[in-house]
Image 1: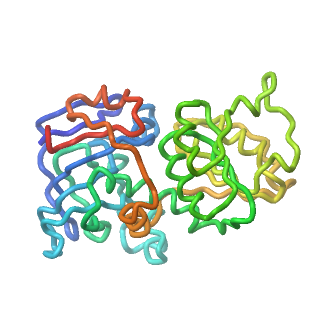
Image 2: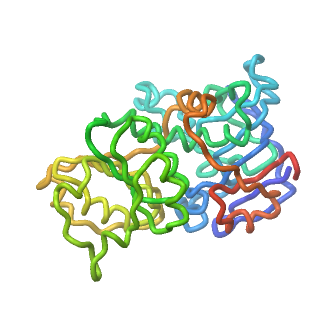
Length: 323
């Protein structure tokens, strides 16, 4: 089987990987499309230093073997946190926080391969009429929707999204559906243009002055700030532009540390929410109904993974239909 394997230091293209053997309660999926996300890039930088295995977790595929016969032959997407099913987190609807959970591309073999085994209860059928090229966005879009599940967004207030990349684009579209006064802060004018149909946009440099940030009035600040920049500087800006008693939602996952003045959080009564994976069915519904839109994925053969990882397209990934 062809696969992209992380050996602890680098990604390696291989053609000698065995097809997965399903364990109890698992289904075998033939991968059709698989996308690269920021977390995959962080894996290469040391985000999961103990991981050795097949990379990737965003995919669309066809079920070829399953204990649920109704799934065989279906086009599906899949959630990525496979818990033990027995601990306090799994028993209380928090499987994604199970201490022994397995996550494709991070702690178990993932989807940058011709086949992947996944727990059957994590599989979701792609609605008819939804193209695989759009369905492949389900997992990251679900992560964007998690914000509205965790935080009550008052549409009469205002919000900012820090970042102009793929995750920020999904988050901004989800927040825009609430009708809130939304501003996206980024570094790249050409990327910010993509946000203009549904949000105000401004450059990060507009907030800078000398070696730091310029002083802001309360009116210039935001009640909600979503940090989705993918780097340490994002949380510093979030702390600067949040209003007192506002809410910061942290979405970035990166290999690194941030040094903050934590006294500002209790003094200004700021709520900080960590946000990760989210609900798949609402994400599939939004995609099916065309209420969110994402650009076409720049697809590569798996053996051309270096080109895929260096692509500047909105989203890059792998097509196994043409490998």
